[in-house]
Structure formats: C-alpha cells, structure tokens
Length: 310
Ligand code: FUB
Image (cartoon, rainbow, N blue to C red; front, side):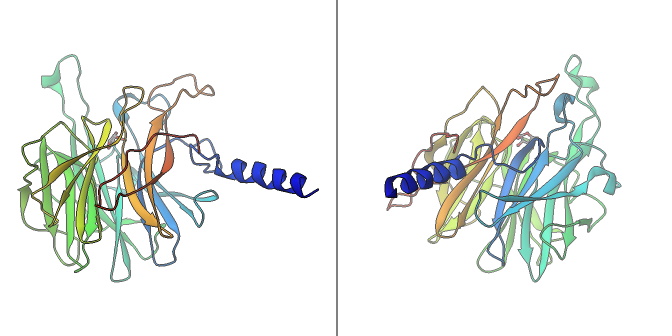
C-alpha cells in the first residue's frame, strides 16, 4: 500500500513539473518574457503577444501573468495595447517592468511604419521606447510621457534595471550598439547621454539585453546573434563587460528572448521557444514561454542550460 501511495505521489509530482511551455490556461502565444518578483513574493511575467499569421512581428498588446509556484499561473490579460498610445500603432515588442517608490513602471517598445523587404529603401519602420505607470503590478498601465523617451536612434527591447542605490538604467537594442542610459530619479526620462558600453572587443549582433545583479556582480545577458543566450559580467552597471560564455544554445534557427530572476532562493531562466501550432492554419511566429532552473558555480559563472519539457 505504501509503495502504491509513493507511486501515486511520484506520478503527480512529475505531472506538476511537466510544464514547458508554461501553462497559462489558454492557447495564447506569448514571447519575450520579462520576469520579476515583487513585494508579495509572487513571480510576475510581462510578455509580448504573437498574433496568428501576422507578418514581420506585427504585435498589438502586452500581457501579464503571475504565479506563486511557477506551475499554476494567473492570466491577468492585456496590461496595455498600442491603441492606448498616441505615437505608435504597432510592434508591441519585448517589454520590461520596474518597481520604485510604490509604483510600477512598464517600459515598452512600440512603433509604426513597415519594412519593405524587396526595396529596403522604401521602409518606413521606426521603433522607440515608452514608459507607462500603474499602482498595480498587473496594470492597466498608462503612458506616462505621451511620447517615446527619444526618437533617435531607433530602439527596442528595453531592460529597465534598478540598482541597489535606487538608480535606474535602461539597456536596449539601439541601432547596432550596446547602449545604456541612466534614468532620471522619477524614471520618466533619461539623465545624460546614451552611453556605448565597452564589451571587451566582442560584439556579435544582438537584441534583448537582460541585466541583473548577484553578490555584487552585474550580469549582462543577451540572445547573441539574436539566438544563443550568452552573458558578460562587470563590476559596474555600465561595464566594462567581460564575456563569460553561453547559457543556452539556439533551437530551430529562431530568436530567443529571455530574463533571469531569483525566486524563493532558486534562480530561474525564462525564455520563449518556437512551436508548430497544429491548431493554426499559419505556423509563422508562434512562440510560447518556457522556464528552466539556472545554476551558478562558486565563482559566479553560470552553468549551461539544456532545454527541457519540464
Ligand atoms: O517579439 C518581437 C521581437 O522578437 C522582440 O522584441 C525580440 O527580442 C524578438 O524576440
């Protein structure tokens, strides 16, 4: 009888762990997860949203999900859409969120125009980064400045990092350089110039930076060549950065946007993977959010992660 009970326990544990892609309770396709653990100890994921069959990542809204155990998720719905903006009508791409002085700052890229792949000179596509604020981690978020933080360079994929001293830094994909800007104290504008960081001479094409701090070390992580997750470390939030290696290999020759956060004493990597959606007539740009445990070595280096279905 004891063995039978143990067997049942084992099966139910395995069933609970089998959770990649994360089960958000619907067929929604999400990408670019930015993970944060706020004051209530819950994990919050801010994601972009793939719309079926849209060309060139035409995306219209951002979503929030929360969980106390990373298995059972609450879908809080869209926290903002491009319809809420006066300065953009498309490209609701990879967002981030930060908390400061009782408010949540949703940092998002959006844009307009289109990319002409046949005659690139006819392209009108433009993207910038905005800031929206809410008293709640799940929104709704309201555009706080009514315009992008800047119009040049073209910018997307922001990571809004708040250091232990309360200073905010925005890292982003901006016209091909590894850029950072310090934020003003109210997080509603940039203080000073955009700063090109020293990456130690190693400069692959990249998007989706994610910065976090652990034991006094700053980690700059990114999908190198938009696909392979790699990381750098530094002693200051603006670098200089030292290349450290690969966190996760690419899969299906597709992009992989991620975030890394500590949750209940363990570190977790969130990322998206591309799937063939058999329920859809169109398999383009169908991404789903996944998670893996992430482990550090004694010296602060990160152990390489192999994708799992759990
Ligand atoms: O989801 C749209 C774009 O694809 C993101 O902004 C990039 O990081 C890539 O994941």
